Amino acid sequence: MASLENKEFEVERANERFYRAFESLDIHKMEEVWATDEPIKCIHPGWDLRSGWPEIRDSWVLIFNHTTGLRLEVTAVDIGVNGDLAWVTCMEQVTMMVDGEPHVSRVMATNLYSKHPSGWLMIHHHGSPVFSGAG
Image 1: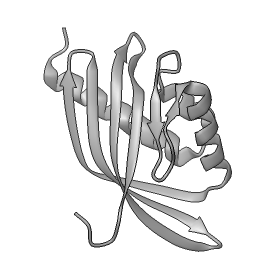
Image 2: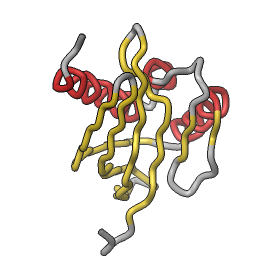
Image 3: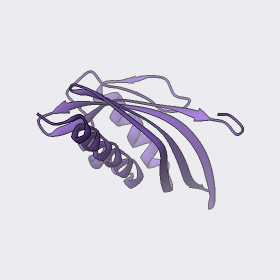
């Protein structure tokens, strides 16, 4: 049985894989980090709730098809684990190119993971915009 410290390390790696998949703008890499056969949820900043892999996949494809030069810096990472369920809260600093100019936004994210034979997979992602001067 894995210790809590080992589980937290595994969840941290899973969270890093999610952000690498996000930054890659590759839907196949994104699919590898989600528990696509479970009742999963995703809320992008300013969007309505997406439920199930087909809806979530379509949302990522839309984001990836309209994004260039994406860079993510993830800070303030806090991890909790309870059995086969884990959660991560973190701050995303998102830099993307729009009309050749960099635009930066901050998003507070909550990511939920469940333990599978293949490792920790995402079951929920919720991003909320953080406006200048807030928090």
